[in-house]
Image (cartoon, rainbow, N blue to C red; front, side):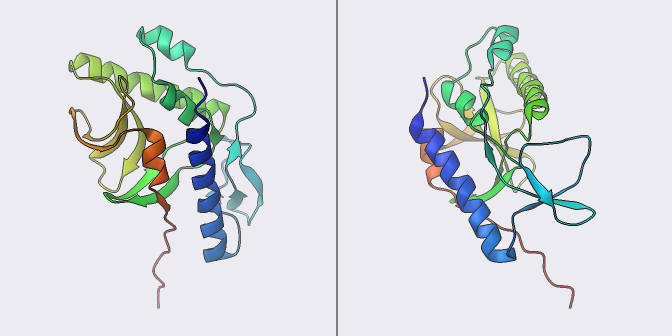
Length: 190
């Protein structure tokens, strides 16, 4: 079942990120050119090493049915919708807990790689006999991720390899609505 409010929250945050970036730098966000990883997000070249990009709504339906079948589980609908709403480079944001980086698929090929990473995460959780969570963001501390509890859709901070330890939102939609885009500006070398 499509959660229109979740899609709207993701779409709004991605637009706010691009707008904040444009206000800061007077152009779209930049990503290193990588011929091995084309994406519908790429708009045009910026220079010899960088492309301008922006998030793109996913037009063709993507599915987690293969992942669900491989793991014999049903993935929470919010996680499915989150990862099938937009193609995007990761989006930096801040919340009460600090800085984070929302993960998205860059392209259809990257969506396949993302699915493999989620399978690995779930298999680790099953091996450790922990509740199943699905990651969607990295934090500013590499030992912690943000994840969704697969049973009820709540959002948690979890130390990699451990049980989630701090609930930070009742749903992915609620959590995304609290985020503010974060544009990193490198300090000048003067």
